[in-house]
Image 1 (cartoon, rainbow, N blue to C red):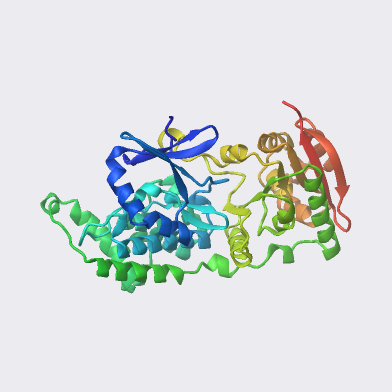
Image 2: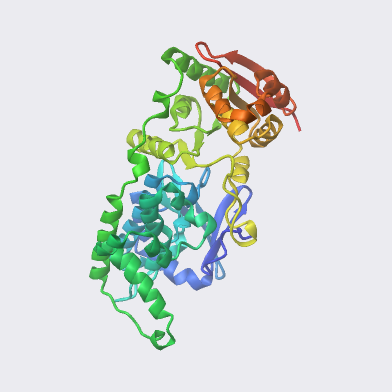
Length: 457
């Protein structure tokens, strides 16, 4: 029974993997809390609400209880969420805490890593975070909630989506003093921001004073619920300038409607030809092409560098109640690395995709950005894509394509360094890693769609 590298912080138990499935072991120190929550129907009520990942109890003995949670197809981390995803993860955490307080329970931690996106929406995945409420005891995870959720959201709202990546370089959250420093002076006049950022950061400093070390603070349950409801309402009303300024990429590209439809049909046909059940759309924008594949696939990851595009993808999913798409923010030029203790607590983007085992990777309207903007040679991008899946559908815009011309013109005096950017050089480099199955010029465009099959290894 090998503990999962991300599951070491809580002595109550840990996750482990066996025969390809994930299980959670509960240690005796948490038996009482677990059995109380179970007997009072807390778990079942949260399952019914769709707020907590369902689990079934596999075995119980004097030294351990084993539960098997519903399996996640692919996990994304907070630093890969769009603004609305981050908001919804924060709101779910607060709603669970409010529900638990109303039922004399509480969350003992409020890490953003306790949330995953499953079947189209946020869900809480840390079963052992639920403990019995102690009368008049303030929520001990409030500071962590603000460091993991409220602080990054406030800074992302003011300065841009890059602050949603806070937990990638500060895995334990952002210091509230840093949040306070980067907010406008007028923010202190907002009662919610003042109490959760300014006041809490002051209390943090004061609490470090040895003279205050043994002082206990009391706060009624009713007061806590009122406070958390106000915080949840504030977060609900938060918006991102980046999102409100979003206008569809596909309204601006150099495609005629006929060409656009031809591209969609080719992608559907080629994925059907290779029996693709799982697909990753790298640079998938708002999921336009992923949606075309929904009737014939089981699961599709849509990744893109553009926060507003992924936000639009997520909002579209919610409206249509789509459960197969997994949207995530990812820059292929610097995808999420492995982080945490021993660099194994949170897996890299690439290793998670490899473990996901997609049948097809799609790289549409992407290679010219990687090659011309990112200066990545064809051989290197081919080798990267070959790690991910057996089949690759990739779109190559020729030098005469308007976007390629624009990028090349921006190189100015260095333009000649990219004379090797052409379809024949591309095809030759990619055939070192792949077998070319078919290619087709997209009518009405200067772009060609290629279907490759990875060489047997």
